[in-house]
Length: 290
Ligand SMILES: Nc1ncnc2c1ncn2[C@@H]1O[C@H](COP(=O)(O)OP(=O)(O)OP(=O)(O)O)[C@@H](O)[C@H]1O
Image (tube, rainbow, N blue to C red):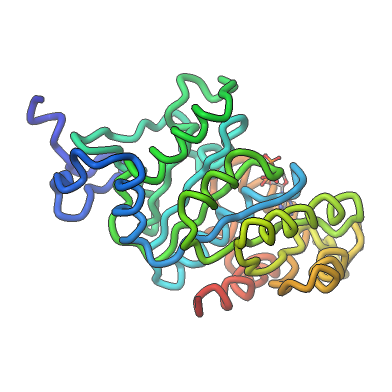
């Protein structure tokens, strides 16, 4: 291997792993042992789940991770959505390739020091759909947990595809010590009914439900600041009560979330003085006490 291959110097804001050298103690370990070793260095692992697509789960995952980083925490964000990884787009990291070391892959380091890894970084083209069956997915997830050089972290936030399929099941079984799941819904019945299945899924797997987040909860009128109940309000809170799990809070609909997501500029970072950013910060407070 040439010296270039082991050169960890920062490039385009990317950062070397701590210590600058590959962790040779990880060599010759089995997949499960690597995961165990790697995950021992991460204090808290939070799963972000939703039973329904399009409710803003990835947006919430990104903004929660950044809210934790803004509190001074060392944070990693892992996207295990094989079929539609959106984290690279949401963070404007399309086309980036993680650097490979002798012992693993370096996550991409973004502004504020957050480490990001997504299967999307490993696809040849963003529009490539990954048609993988269960066993391959399980192996790939174990690699994302065990072979990525996360280093010491306070939090790893893990974003999943919607539903209760192989991805959350594998992570739950592979890192049973995870702190728990945050469950994202929108207020309408059509969402809360599906998302309550995520709560049931967590119960069946003994994953603590850290709480429900009601996203897209009321639109704040940009002209008069009155709240318009576009998708109703309170459905997520009522679902949390019904399912006897904590309610973490509501994030309003904010058109700036759409534009900043499309531009790959994390909303909470660029629009700190908004009600939605304040909502994310309030939601993160109980997670700081884990
Ligand atoms: N609070 C909000 N206000 C306005 N737009 C939002 C809000 N939350 C998310 N969005 C927008 O909703 C769309 C879907 O969000 P996102 O991709 O995060 O959903 P998702 O639940 O992760 O979808 P899937 O898992 O099906 O890929 C995006 O355009 C995003 O910008």
